[in-house]
Image (cartoon, rainbow, N blue to C red; front, side, top):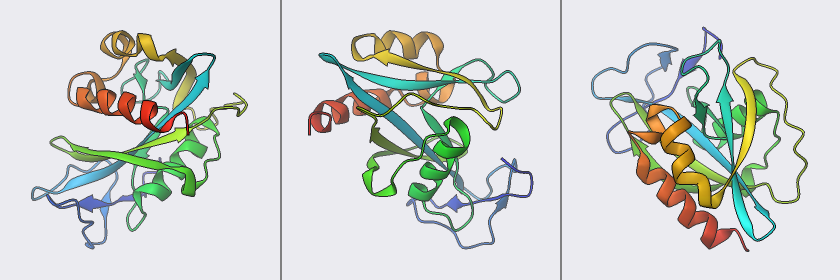
Length: 179
């Protein structure tokens, strides 16, 4: 993230506000929320599914906590899908096809509106790289261990604020993973 970035804000109905954007690291104003795209890579591995988590580097907020495969703020006038593709490339070096993103959930907290996307990584190489220093490692978590891993190792926006996202994620993987 660059300090000169402007973040897209959304109203309560989830509509983007055309106000020139909000400077990075500024609190949301007037009941508006910053847009955040989260991407969840999954793969079929043997007889089970796995979900990729990234470990935040010691140099960033939520240091050493695990988070979605990739994610970050939606820039002003950028779509959540475009932000998902950009953040995946910046954080873990994954080149995603926008047409293969599967949207599955919007959730909110006091400051942000989260747009969650699923992406099938089955059969693709694990040649992830962390050029921007935001991520220190990635880890595939087996489906059966997902709940326990999330409770013990993820940052609060997943483990505490949005536990329903993990339930929806599991349901979406089971529904679309074998297609």
